[in-house]
Image 1 (cartoon, rainbow, N blue to C red):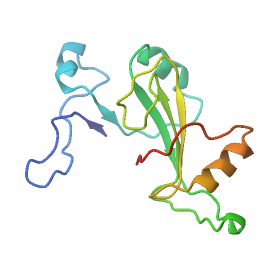
Image 2 (tube, rainbow, N blue to C red):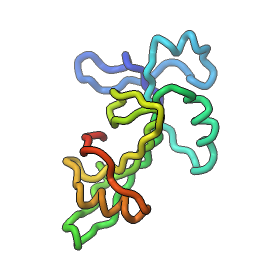
Image 3 (tube, rainbow, N blue to C red):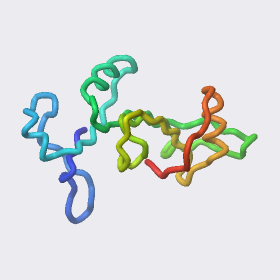
Image 4 (cartoon, rainbow, N blue to C red):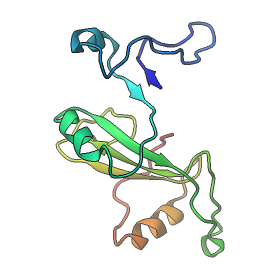
Length: 137
């Protein structure tokens, strides 16, 4: 599914189908539609290198939604709608408003955020939570 910024129903706000094939359309046809949101499922390890090369200095993200396991110790429970992990390229905030010269990994937990859960997940990977909570997907 491909979405351009102008592809919303003016009455309902629902996303509409995008009429161009981004794999074959000339870049001049795509530029007026930027930014694009692409939802496409691919097997891990098949597109990451090409994706990063294509992004270059631009802003983009790769996300994986899922459901974190329940954790009775922190009284936290998984939410399939809100849990996941997202890598933002050349950006520091989940809403793409702060371009940066580095990449940022966001761990999505719960609709309202769950700092103890995020800290525990980060520690599991040998990392820590940096910065304030942000509201994403």
